[in-house]
Amino acid sequence: MVKPMKNIFFLIIIIQISLAMGQNRKERIVLDFLDARYSGNVVMLKSLSSPDFIYFNTPYVGLGITTEWKHDSLFIKNISEESPVYNRLHQDDHILEINHSLVSQKVIGKEIPFIGPIGKSIQLIVQSSDSSNFIEYQGALDLIQKKQGLGQFLDHIQSFSSLWESSELQNVSYFSKRNNIVISYNWIGNKEGESVQYTFSTIEIYEINPINITVKSIQSQWSERQLLDQIKGTP
Image 1 (cartoon, rainbow, N blue to C red):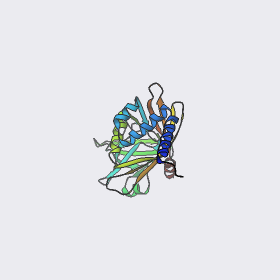
Image 2 (image 1 turned 90 degrees about the vertical axis):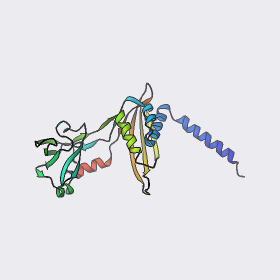
Image 3 (image 1 turned 135 degrees about the horizontal axis):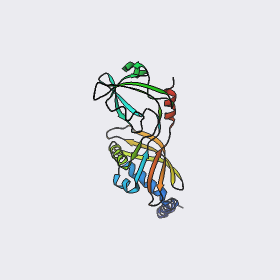
Image 4 (image 1 turned 45 degrees about the vertical axis):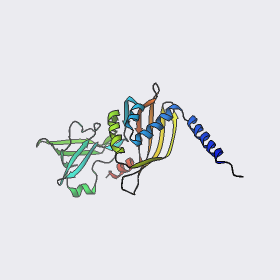
């Protein structure tokens, strides 16, 4: 005998209530934070975040700079505040020489000079963007972990969410211990007018402020790519 659909409906309600009861308040805050984050709801994100919120990007071994090739030359596009060259080099500086070799598109195409293990020596000759002065930098690759305060994080979320027509989270799992919650998930998104899907997987550690139960910090964790890039940059 087939049971009435009404009984099935009530069973679903009971299961949903049981799942909700199984989550403590800190875990629910993190799940709400994720929903707001990937739907671009910055108002809710702000209400769920501590005023001293910090987002720690995935740590990366490098020099903390990004470059771009334009006008047949290599220029500095951006420098992280955590970079060892932050106060010495600047955006739009022209990189002329890397490790005693003149920069050319042919050379850059064959190797990526700013990846490798911690301590790998780096030598640069740079022409300043605001003068004809030349700067020589001698240093080494280091572990760089870019940080974002609440304002920067919300701006990034707003920009990121505007790229996607639709997105969803899959395979969300988590466990908590005291004020830390470790969560893993897959993100899948589609751009407007495109049939292809974009995706990434991540593990993050959320630190909860125990006083007002808000998100105090997020640590994005190390990935295999970071290790592979270190190996790739080793002679």
